[in-house]
Amino acid sequence: MSTKKKIQEEVDVLEKETNLNEIVLFNDDVNTFDHVIDSLIDICEHTLEQAEQCAILVHYKGKCTVKTGEYNDLKPRCTMLLSKGLSAEIL
Image 1 (spheres, rainbow, N blue to C red):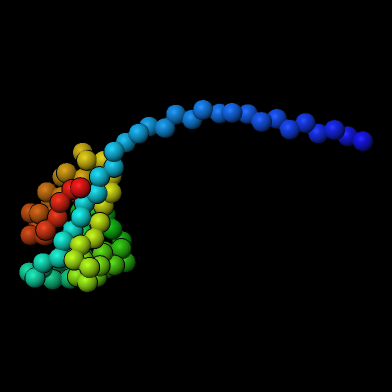
Image 2 (tube, rainbow, N blue to C red; image 1 turned 90 degrees about the vertical axis):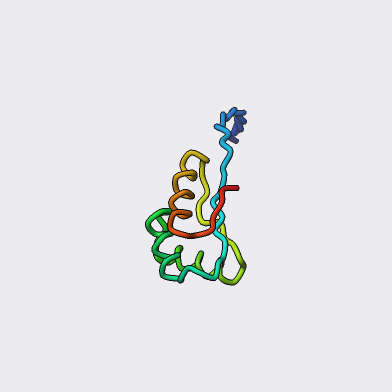
């Protein structure tokens, strides 16, 4: 008869806490779907499918989170979206 020993180890994992922010894009009556989609692809590095889905969500829901990350990465992206005439803010 064999005896198996179970060894239980406790491992402490250090996680770097980062405060993630998000860019929220808001609906407007000015910009076309194509302009929004092209902007999301260029600025937020979305795929065509991601950009289309976000544009549809913005249109029907009024807003959509289009990018999540650290503030220092999001700030220039949000500024570029604003410069293209889109309504966006970092939360």
